Length: 561
Image 1: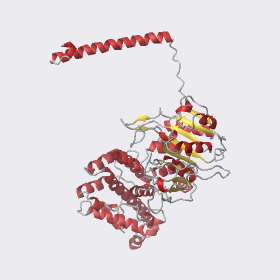
Image 2: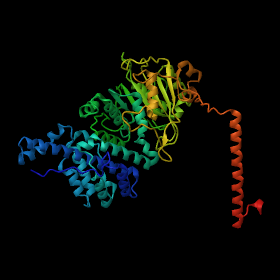
Image 3: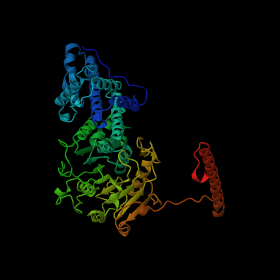
Image 4: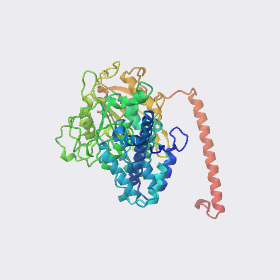
């Protein structure tokens, strides 16, 4: 019997067994002058290859132990160890010998290593129909030097990402997600096509709570909404998230999606496959407007971050489309085409509730009257479809600093979808102004607290927003809802009408109450005036010192000359 191999040991003793930042820095150093958009597929494809090889090896070692305990050894055992059905039965991808990581790593110094990787990807697709046409097979075409590619293989080889322990911690998923975010930052504006910040995704998922049913994202990017949805169900599953509960969680929701960018569509398939998540993303990439791959789908939950303010969306070809129930969107902006696409795909009320959608939009969608947008928004409001609007802080996105908002649209405000039934909110919309939440992680990027914590802390940024919404809906253990000046307000349709159907939360929540500090006005003015006088005096002293220093250097100011 062949000697049992061991998956690579973790790089360090941290919770993940690897420091994603160290791995990123090493990989980025090897990038050299290769464009981030190109390098992304090189790195993430290799990480995927390492994962399925580690998972295959873990299953092979377990199978070898099972056979040995049954007294099956030697050639008989070797035949079973190379039996594809033994792996497929355990939902493990079959990895042929020429695609296994040990073989790839041994070829890392070979001049033709890029072609060897392409052949490995082809072999995996050949033997795993679910992955056919969904893996990158163009390493040789990219022209990366053997030294850089071999160095990258050695870096990725340092982490165990497919072992049982690593899968339990979702090591690969978290490294993969970390790399997606890093590549999005490196690519700048174009990075937003495949990545939505994890704090925004977490908030959307926590708000609409996709416990069970059909989840849909018609512009799914790399699949982050789906990953977070499964993670949400798993974190709320019985059995403390053990294997059986986690497995059941994946069966409780059915995932449907679509993505128009071919390379991003492949990223999504890999991102889901590494977590064992089944999804219907269509047989090929396609534009959701021109070629809706799920025309008859009525989803229980819709989560999306569509591209903002897109003018080139083929609107001139879709003037009579059935989706435009509330008005034909302007040709020059796709925002209200997306909104109506989401509404079209929502499941209707069935006596136990209806579908709900949560999605990101540019703030202009709340008040714009360009083209027919104002009229469409009015009709959507009058149809009582808008459940909640959240104004978000700036700088949450890697790709744009413009402020965004979250829309939550539902077919049924009766509360019947909740167990026990919640509040009947017909004729009402909740407005939340969250612009003051979040902390700056870097000079240009803000994050919401609570994004990586399970269960979600009620006092975190995400917990405050989601908790307010859940209380307004009347969910069990969410507490009693109350309007809070400057933060949240439950407004009636009549109030929205008075504001001209503008949905900007600031118009409804008002200004926050200012606490009385107990200092009498006269005393405060005297104190502040004294502080101002001190500042003026200090400014004059600094100005005099600067003038003297300039004069001593032979550069007096004109009025001092």
